[in-house]
Image (tube, rainbow, N blue to C red; front, side, top):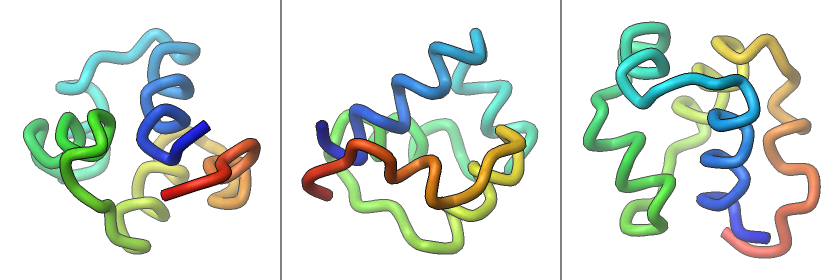
Length: 68
């Protein structure tokens, strides 16, 4: 699984839309969408913001990730 697939998987598990994550993190919808499609690498800062919004540890975002 790639990081982009993992990001989308968690968002879908939490039944959230891109706009929800954007509003909760301050990261633009486009940036999140690009990261979930693998079109853009996501920064460590953004990973921390997303994990905080999801209420999980940053390491949980990386569980099962084999490639960035």
